[in-house]
Image (cartoon, rainbow, N blue to C red; front, side):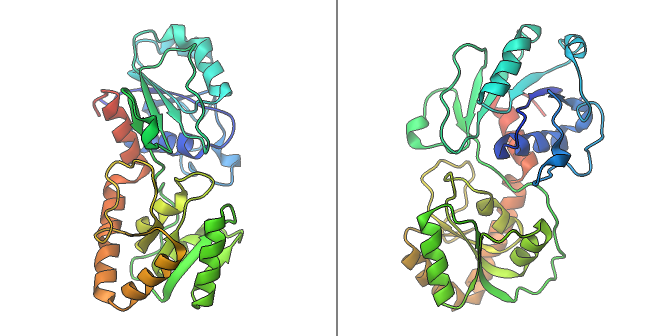
Amino acid sequence: MAPSILYITSPKIRFLEDIIHEGLDELLGPDNVYCYPYKDYSRFQYNLYPESAAKEPHRKPIGRSRLMELGNEVTAVVIGSARAEAIATWRSIEDLFPDQPVGILNGEEDFVPWPTDIRYTHRFIMDFLPEHQEPGVYPLPMAAPPRVMLPEDVPRDIAVSFVARNTRDVRIRCAELLRKAGFMVLMDADLPREQFCWILNRSKIAVSTRGAAHDTFRYWEIPYHGALLLSQRLPILIPDNFVDGESAVFWDTPEEMVAKIRELLADPDRLARIAAAGRRLSWEKHTASARARYLLEKMGVRV
């Protein structure tokens, strides 16, 4: 029998919070994940729940009276954000769930101090820098939630693509060098999800850099769609991370990025081998449901 999870939400879209919510829904089934307060994902640009927006029980509001009935049913509690709204929600109902393990997610672009006036047993960080290491704290990066996926036989006729928003100087420098070399660059383009996925499915290589945080969706979406992940080396800790030269290729400077592109394009067999290994690892370890399984395992919840 699948465990039941009470998921504490915050009102705004938060990538890690919403990915884990989606992953729990996929892993356990919507009948085993209780969303409180109700969060209407259908109104967000990144609609992670198009197929289950109306499913019971957590796709419709539930109140405190229903929560009181769930005291013995809930296996564990996950607080989706370390921001004030989610903390206030959990503070108001934590007396109803005194014995369950409680995980809290710190998925902010800038680290938010851990709250000290509520009960929780496990802590998870998206941008897990080495200085964050201490007992009971675990890395929990973003992942590649299921999106529009074109057929596998789409020809990869785009040598290199770089699709990003202008949020870091390193992105600007990468865009300059890639444009100069004649590769596809789309900066600040408001693309529909289908078009972005279409580009990744047609790309042999796709470039990723850090964004507002070190962790960024591009890092996970690129190998998910089968392109070779050519990424800026990130300082954060990532469980089951891609391995340089085996399932991705990493660079430290934009100039090194261009040199590695030349090497990869000159050796198409190596390029294809690394891209295929990255895709396999992505689908095995870096989907939303894989993240949810990892979180529950760390919390001692058997799935």
